[in-house]
Length: 273
Image (cartoon, rainbow, N blue to C red; front, side, top):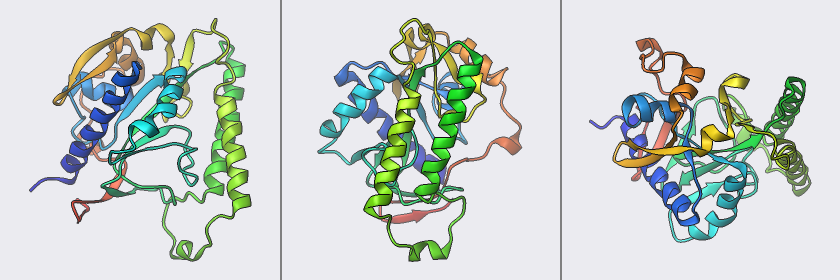
């Protein structure tokens, strides 16, 4: 019997192929990040128990992707979910969703559009001064929390949630203003080309683990990922060592668990395991 994780992986490969096609059409360099970079190098594809996928672009390329993708995706079953394209979506980065699927995530209940997805992160220039770095990250986290709270993101579902009225036009306008403030904060150092470090500000890792030099994420090479070919930083070894230590060593079996999805609807069927 096909496992749920295998079904998710097959759909995510379709999402990734679509993203690669978009980036090729727009001549945008992208690169595998986080667990997806680790999977590319250690497994030549998915980490077998990992149910998400992370891709990164430098901010200027990311913005070009967000501007052009909606028209290019118009006749497909994919949707580029962003803070602007989905008013109920609270995160600071984009997701490419397969609209032929529906998901429920662990510890993440909200009214945003749902579908099997891959995450697409912008990398923004950051200051060299550690005090300014802390200040930016703290302000980002505060704004992020306010946005998620106002959009009613919850760890667990509550039957009373379904009785709530949708957010009013005034409430959504307030959220749009907060999203614009968060975007301005993330990009506040973009104009200073002398700054040669970039960061995924939405990273779940400790601060320095997803800080890169511009050189690290612009010097790319091709690697196999399942049946696809993807772009990774040539300096992947130093990046992965910084993030994971001995990155070729497998974690204990107790840690080899899916992190995100607990229910998937696809092909008119419900899958939970």
